[in-house]
Length: 308
Image (cartoon, rainbow, N blue to C red; front, side, top):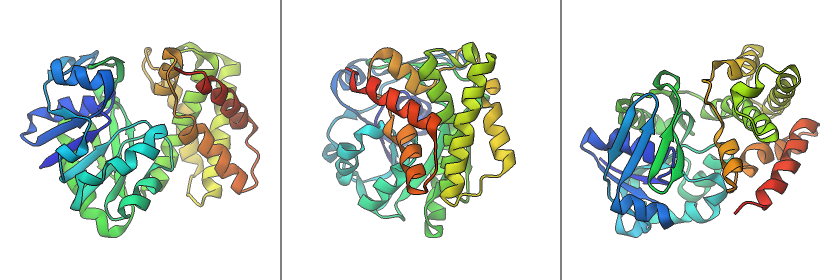
């Protein structure tokens, strides 16, 4: 199988290293200083759970050099979609599947518009690492906490989803095929957007704010607002799911920080539009008030505008 990993950062490079011994043909697609490091030194991962990992994989910034592949693992930051989605064209043949591993919602729709709903698979990922320097990834989550829930957008692509699951299963992450990927993406958003918002507003790791009553109440308000928007979108988010989201801060390790909080700390761009922005815009379409998300969105837009 030929696999292209587009966006070889904390998620893409991590999965690439875990897949490197499968015998498949894997190529990393990235750019800039990170690409130069991938070419000269390979990927180096420091993991609390897995130890020191490394791999040398082919890397390029030109998809035309690669040509059509069987599977694209699409892991670019959501704010790069406008440029990155069209750049996939040389990788996509009649049987190519595109699996997006991005944060937030709205990504599958952009890919489906460009390449058709049958080619696109969505995934809600918990796991991966953080790029701390060109070619270097830091990984802190326990392996048992890492999951990929993936699914097709239409029933006709069910076999594609099963094939992607089989490809990713040897990584050691728990990989499952779900029947309603849109619901799964929104359920992930309930916790992820809420964790990211509190983490960025407080500039604290999850373990540093989760036992503070006011911060925990703030987190709950984010969850409740996102739940209301998801239900307005027609998703069947029951009370049990909302209760699950409310307990997520307690399930994370002492070193947990969301990727958005890490990006804010590093002074680089954040995926504000695909996370807080999507909640606010969809709430407006349904006439819902989401004052907590609106405040976070305004603050994070400002901070994002100052990113290097």
